Image (cartoon, helix red, strand yellow):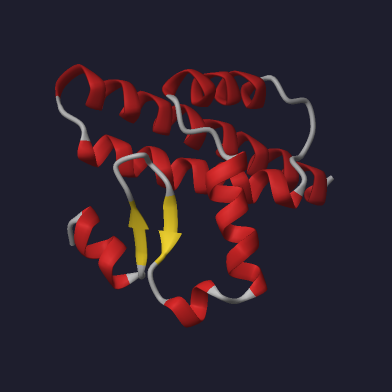
Length: 119
């Protein structure tokens, strides 16, 4: 399944300005959808510089992330994967590297949580 097929199937649209929206009007009218829109378009980082900054902060974060921060980081990973799929050459490598760094940060967070629970 291509990224375009995935966004069509999930009823999401990412326009040329990188604004994320829900295609289905009924779904988009729900309060949770408005929160999703705010998170995706106002909170999660979209530039490679901002995403690298987030990865750096997360890699040195000494404790388990709050649920909201974890979820926002997952959304950032999804956005980063989308950008990697849309890019070519060096740009693609940069987006993939950022995706991997976010993955490592979240894996570290999950390991902190696991170790906390087993102690």
